[in-house]
Image (cartoon, rainbow, N blue to C red; front, top):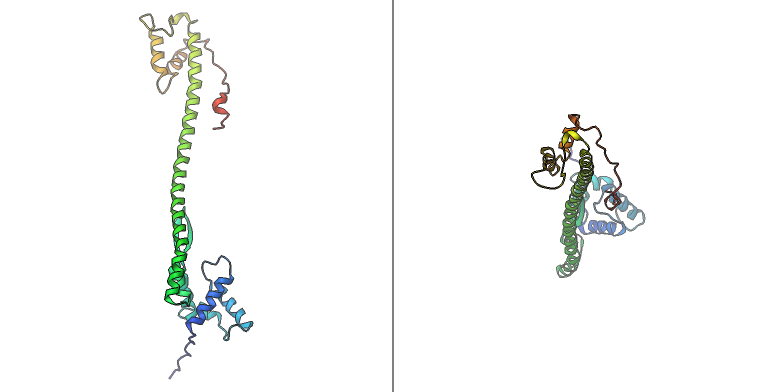
Length: 237
């Protein structure tokens, strides 16, 4: 008959909690307890004579062992992950930490929790405000992109309008078009000018001019050289 393996030794929970508590107090910015790190810390305490018994790495790492079970339980209680702008920020649970690690009386624990809860609530409030500001920032960023696109469109249209106006002035020299009273209203306005007026306020304000050029009716229409509009372009939009 096969003999069963020796059962793992069970250590007092309060002593193990003291080891973990001291580890957390002596380490900076520890959110998740790593098995290797707590093993090395406990080994160092043993070598210094502070700890009366030596704990193996398996004690902290192997499934089912007392050390691993305790570390996993504390890690689970310590961290409440909150997704924030696609990142995770760890929030220590005040209740779980005090109840799991403190050796004080229930009354003292309650006082400590009430004091620390102020910080926890304050952080959650700041976190909520942060999320609101991030959403507002994203919305404003999109609005800026749209405004820049609109400004570029207006700049392009402005250039087209300038070209159209200068070309209108030059159309008066084309005898075949018989252009008179280019800007004034009335029966004297020709069909060509009437069409120019209709097109200039549409999506393609230079449509009529382009059609006239396509028909080779205008040979001496001049274009203007684009000049810098410092009021807009100096903004580097």
